[in-house]
Length: 125
Image 1 (cartoon, one colour):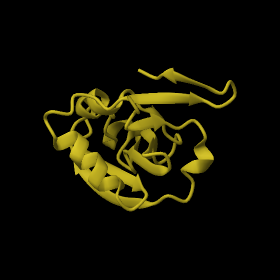
Image 2 (spheres, one colour; image 1 turned 120 degrees about the horizontal axis):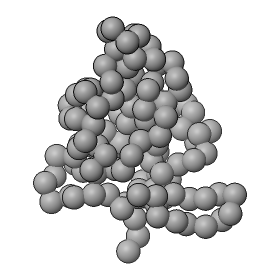
Image 3 (tube, rainbow, N blue to C red; image 1 turned 45 degrees about the vertical axis):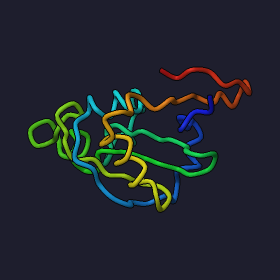
C-alpha cells in the first residue's frame, strides 16, 4: 500500500512554505495520527511535523510562538499541553490535516521515513 505521507528529513524542502491555517487539537491526537514530531528550530517552534503528501505536497504542523523556547518556562506552553497548532505548506495542507485529525475512521496515517543517504524506505513509527 502506498503511504499517505512520509516524514521529511530534507529541511530545505520546507523552507519557504508558509502558514495556511490552524487546527485545534491536542498533541496526543497529532502523535496518534502522524507519529512523533521532530524538533523545532529552538526559537519560535518547539516541535514540528514535516510531511510530504501525495509525492510532492509539503505539510507542516507546528507550535508557532506558543512554546517554552519562545515565551520561556513561565508563559510558554509545552507541546503536550498545546491545543492550537499552525499548519503550513502547500495550499491544501490545512484541508489534509483537518481531514485526517477530524475523521474518526483514520486511526493513523502510514508515514515512512525516506533515508536519503542510504536510498532506503524504512518505517518511521
